[in-house]
Image 1: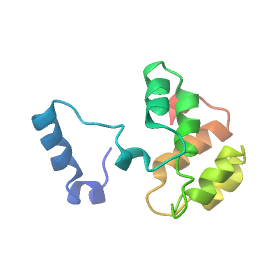
Image 2 (image 1 turned 45 degrees about the vertical axis):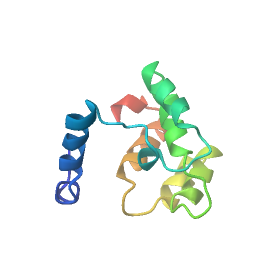
Image 3 (image 1 turned 30 degrees about the vertical axis):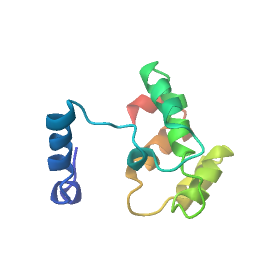
Image 4 (image 1 turned 90 degrees about the vertical axis):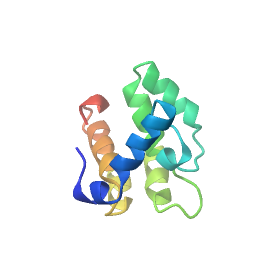
Length: 113
């Protein structure tokens, strides 16, 4: 669900406006995945083909760019060190990534996150 910050920030209104204007919400734009070494279409292809664990790994490693607050965590995830990656995630704005990493670390299906 949405938290209070998301509701107050206009996320719902903006998304509804996109649906009204374009007919869909573009979940594959750069604001969703950041400027990344992983190409957005790779994540989309993994999602479309039901390769949930692959999509999650791509998401976890997609923010390694210089200056990203997720860079150190993404590097750790890329090397397979999920414990370290979890420690390095920022406190704010990383709940989804944290849940995905926990599922993969515990060898649970990523879709359960």
